Length: 64
Image (tube, rainbow, N blue to C red; front, top):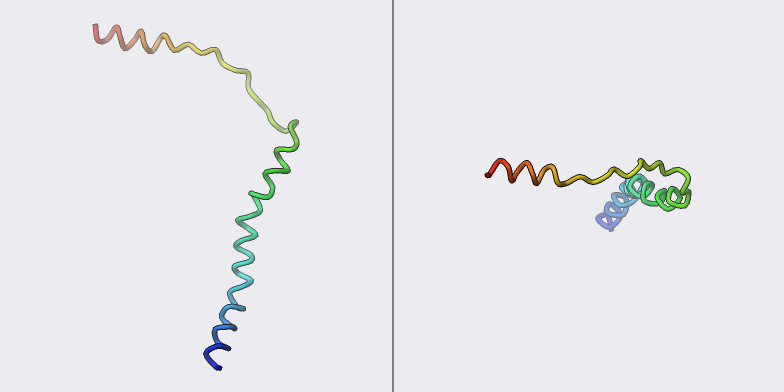
C-alpha cells in the first residue's frame, strides 16, 4: 500500500508541471487559427521579376 501511495504522490507532484509544459507548447498552435482569420495583418512585398538567364549565361561562358 505504501508503494502505491508513493507512486500516486509522485504522479500528483508531476501533474502540474506536465500541465504547464503542455499549455506552453499548445499556446502557439492554438493561436495560429486566430491569426489566420485576420487577413489584414499580412504584409506582402511586391513580386520580383524573375531573371534566371544571367546565371545560366555566366556558367556557360565560364566553361566555353
